[in-house]
Image (tube, rainbow over all chains, first blue to last red; front, side, top):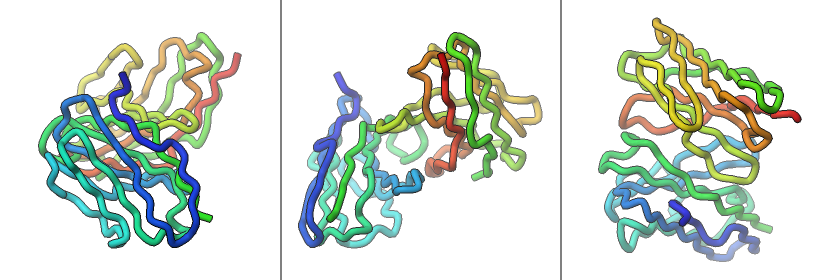
Length: 115
Length: 109
């Protein structure tokens, strides 16, 4: 009964390809997030969605497009992958409608490697 | 959000209490102290948070000094599975969660 789940866990692809990462939470939370953890292990917020609406976009390139079909799912689609996109991507969720107000719970991460 | 200072690493003996310090001397009155940890190859895991009072849950205890300029996370009986990077984060409600370098804790048998 994983609270926040992501698929796939590992993703290896060539430069220029388009790929998607899926996230689902079964906590009934209203807000979901995408974070990127780079090689130096620093986690940075990318996006925040509240009930299918984009609330925060932290100056992420347009090649990254989050999509939320419903409040339990937040997928991340990346176009024209670049070497610098290699990282671990974490999905998270929190209960309330205001981002970063309530405790965030993280998924297991997706390790993306761009060759 | 206030900046935090944590030791880079620390070792702890299995079965003993692990006391993880965090300095946040510029903390504001509306900022909470959060602790997360990240076990190797896993997502960050919420541990505990507090504002002024000491807090305890099934995972840990959080001791916040009266002036709120520092805090200590206590893992009462460390196990090998507690080996992880522990992040002390100070933030106000509504502000984003910003992870710093953390403390790399190694629990040894």
